[in-house]
Length: 336
Image (cartoon, rainbow, N blue to C red; front, side, top):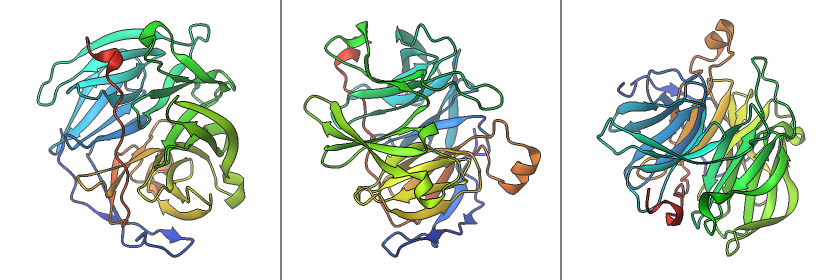
């Protein structure tokens, strides 16, 4: 457990265009003292004002609630944690390549994991990575190949899956096979577009999205890191109330702010951690940006250069609000 650190570091931010976002007035602080090895997957629970996230390498699901940081210790890599609609204390998690539920009620230390189904059985070393629920509560979750100590990942071994609740856990629908590192997901307010990241492509793709059938079509490149000479790769992603994207820049020490309509780079939010992994808006007013970072493989010299490496961060004062994170529809989970 740890109280919020009072230390506040002013951010030096570069705005590439003028607009309502108050880059220079933003501030950043550490949510807790704890250093994550592989912090990922932040989810703001607007119903209970709780921040959830995972540490993939330490096999932990965390929650930050009423200034307390608590965690559940699991038995394998955990890629994501997303709550289920209408089910207090019930979450879907990606555990290795197994889809599972986690029962973990607020103000209780006990927990229960139920394993539901497994994917990528013919691809040893694969694991779940990023996941989101769309507006209708459909779960979209992707996998990736084994990452060695040097950060090498075999290409094309991952898949973006969708939970089809007509068959529930009998099979997950493979929507996009042959991806390398299935990562960030976001949908626009009109539910006509789905944005998607396969990190090694260094691109954000956009699909036409049909909310009735929860299906995608007509893939196009939306934003390419090469356009603005952005270092590193895109990782996790979220969307704000203006329909613009906020993209974690792994090995870039920043979060990119990209127009959701024109695909123009609006600004760069500098982060004092090089390996920025994911982002989400939260807080009671959805006006804070939560950022997860990674310390795995970071040298002592890099820790000195990026003093908030491995920390979960809260950025306030941006002057922009986010959208609520979606919970997973409960049809397949009513009896769990």
